[in-house]
Length: 67
Image (cartoon, rainbow, N blue to C red; front, side):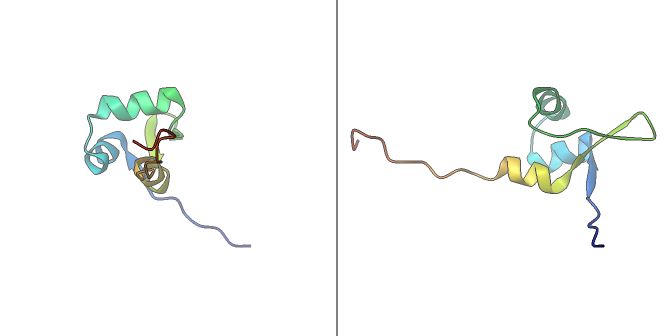
């Protein structure tokens, strides 16, 4: 059985990595954009790869009017 360990970040580490305020990380968790992992019942962590996926730019599409 293969298991891969998640790299869990604190809110402060995630905020630094994303270059946003830690409250933004909390808001993303509340909005469901990031999954919250609770360690020892009270410490909040987020998955680094999930954060990276959230931060990956989406290519712009051409408008239908061709402008």
